Image (tube, rainbow, N blue to C red; front, side, top):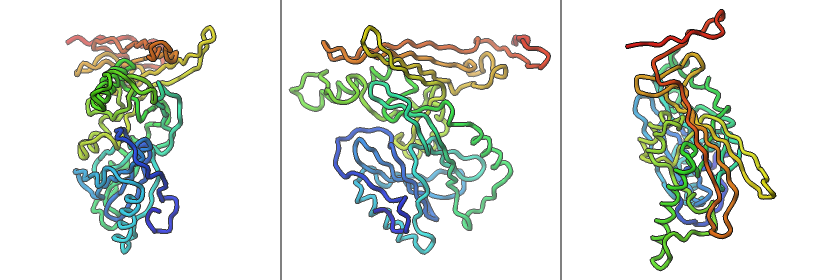
Length: 359
């Protein structure tokens, strides 16, 4: 199984069983590299299918990435990997790099591109059966040409930008889900899932009554689906810009995960013997964000500083009479006062004076 390079940790194991087509980001990634390219194997555990992404190792401003295989079984993917190892054996062969749980972004500073990946995740809870994870570990992989081929030097500017990016602690307050759009409210997700469920019911058989849902899965109105480009442009998707180059090259969102920066907590309650789940989710806008006192008021683009959307979700299970979920959501939005104003911090002034800018 896997390339015959003597390394067992890069070998793939899984189930070859066929599953119906369900589109969502790949939950497991196996990353390999040769002297000329990176090969990333994506695995969807729902469909039990694999895909293969190829990224050319090169310096420059253009990202060359393509999906070599979009759907295949375990045997087919291992055949491709073994052949890649044979074809490049004289220059080092195919080598296993790491296992990942998602791509956060693909970004370039002054020379080649970098791949930012999730290497560890922690299960934090779920919303109507959709699991939510916290980022617990990340890694930055250079995608530039291999040593001896690259004409680029690691300049002080490149090292500085790289340090600034990795200075952001992505293990504190960053969350994602493979099947639920965390950057959107419960109402948005329910309506989107409801529309998809009605379309699937109508297409499956003409004799089936439209609106009838299967009892399996997360429940009516919460169908799993891939995120659209519009979803990634949301103000609450923190890595929207980081994923733009890769999404544009592939014309697909299946290889990246949408991160939300904010807060998550979930508690189990009992009200008169009825079990309930209370979830608090806060989403921080990626626009005009910053630390206290340094980001105030409104930007020239009309974005207020430190805008946060807080959602409280109360889930009481399923109504046994209708079969519909008993769930409610309260959404609150806060942000800085939408005026041009600022505050100058000083150790001698615990309450800095508000400076209102008039134009």
